[in-house]
Amino acid sequence: ESGRSRSWIKVKGSLSNEFRIVGFTESKAAGGLSSLLMAERSGSGFTYVGKVGTGFTGATAKELTAKLKPLLRDSPISNLVMDEKVPGARWVEPKLTAEIEYANKTDAGHLRAGRFKGLRGKAEAAPVSEGPSTRPPQLVTDSHLAQIFITNPDRRMFSDDGPTKLDVAMY
Image (cartoon, rainbow, N blue to C red; front, side, top):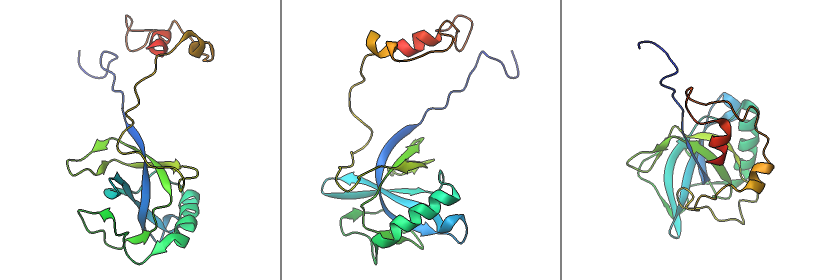
């Protein structure tokens, strides 16, 4: 069978984690913000994981810039491990934590296709995890399912003989 069909469905998967903002680059447009410079906890310091330049609106960019400006410093924090220079970087104290959605990491440990999802509240008091969550998956119980409303629970997904929406929820 050639062309588009329901025999092959592309489902995009992505990862999400929280990273500290250690700097940013500026733009004349886009609310003054071009990209955020992100890092993750590594021992007693931080390791740079790359730039994230999408996922924020003009209004969000202005809001982020207003929160970052008071945290400005002349140079990167001393316990930041970096493997590349970032031209035009404005460095900040790593007090703000952002949730970032990304496709995966490069061999160098940088985020691939990173997208800003939002700031995490009270980041100063909470530690940032190292890498993706290692919490074991929880099984869905009947009481969990009782709290979820599933439209068309008998509808087959992916193909005529594929799992139902309820089967997917149970999985």
